[in-house]
Figure 1 (cartoon, rainbow, N blue to C red):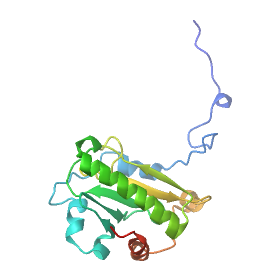
Figure 2 (cartoon, one colour; figure 1 turned 30 degrees about the vertical axis):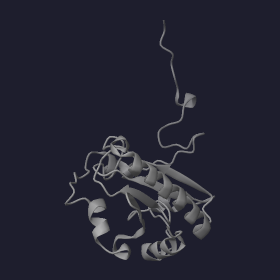
Figure 3 (cartoon, rainbow, N blue to C red; figure 1 turned 90 degrees about the vertical axis):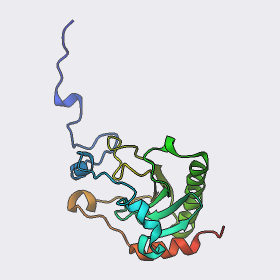
Figure 4 (tube, rainbow, N blue to C red; figure 1 turned 180 degrees about the vertical axis):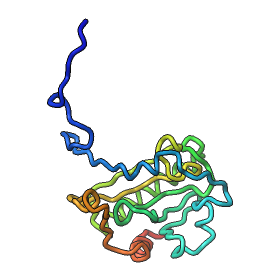
Length: 182
């Protein structure tokens, strides 16, 4: 059997836009190259956040088993994290009550974001473990990233700049005020 010969006309070169509309972000390598810190209950930002005020920790909702707060490094305005109070690394470590409340908070957050910012879509997910890309792998958290048509422009690619049109404290107040009472 002969080995087929390929030319660059047969495939796209790395970094060249293709049918998948990939955005190449080599600067993110710092997050995936093993430089992540290990956290315990005393040093974990998700464990210490509930002990501070909602405004200081950017918490928009506190439930019985989990809470929602703004991401300090958002991909888009309103980028929320849903976090169990308990310091656990994986989704399958969550109790049924924790998993149910994470799901319920996620559903409510989607409605609040649609109402307050007219989000047209969402990216929702959990990165499990360091290898899975979790920035804080030791404490389970789910991302809720609101999306709008055209929300990514040339600035992140060309200028390394992401436009976030409101401060985190303004967004936190807006979402907390719009969160339905329990």
